[in-house]
Image 1 (tube, rainbow, N blue to C red):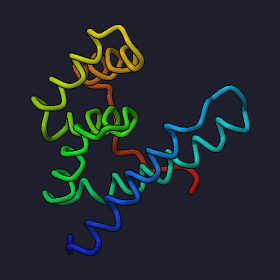
Image 2 (image 1 turned 180 degrees about the horizontal axis):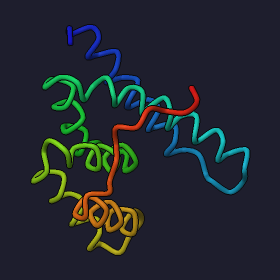
Image 3 (image 1 turned 90 degrees about the horizontal axis):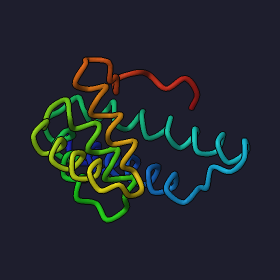
Length: 124
């Protein structure tokens, strides 16, 4: 992946996840809007995961200050940076705070081989 593509896809990944972080899911309209952002993030993630530089960019976002970005980045990174991703997700799961249940579920599904993060988005 060339540097321009890396910047473009990394930016798309972060922008879409930051957008989902700001949408309360209290209605169907908001859920549909959230899903559109997730589909666009997934398109970026699929491109980034193709290269070592792209995977490193996702892994680095485990330290992102926006929790949604950090959590999704950790879930994606389990497939190539398991130790770092697992450390983050285990701490989150143990916290009992926002995102703890999701972190537990991600780790459980990964450990039994059911976590899939490479599916093509249905709608863009």
